[in-house]
Image (cartoon, rainbow, N blue to C red; front, side, top):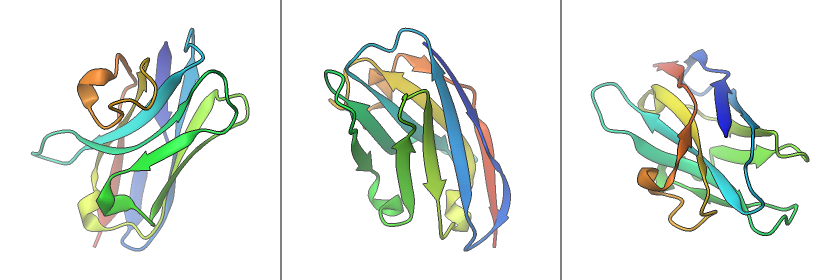
Amino acid sequence: VQLQASGGGLVQAGGSLRLSCAVSGRTGSSYAVGWFRQPPGKEREFVSAIGWSGGWSDGSTRYQDSVKGRFTVSADRAKTTVYLQMNSLKAEDTAVYYCAHNPSGMTYSGRSDRYRYWGQGTLVTVSS
């Protein structure tokens, strides 16, 4: 599985950005794509995930508490691109954002060690 994240940039606090994660390869029929971020000088943390089971078209989602109501994860119909719409951005959202593939689906979707394949990061900088 290959993943490629894009869409990062510089934005003012209160603004919006949409990250994209292009997913290709043998993803399987039950899997999740998660978004993680690593703020400067801090450890990587879970942000959000979307997953599918047995080929169902509607994905289930999960969010870290600090982004609930501000971030929305979604995917295109073909599941080849996963999006992270980020609204009402705050300075503390500044980080390198990564997308990753979890072959176990939404099980333990918040744990980075459950993700097998990772894309390169994209930097999001929110100025206050």
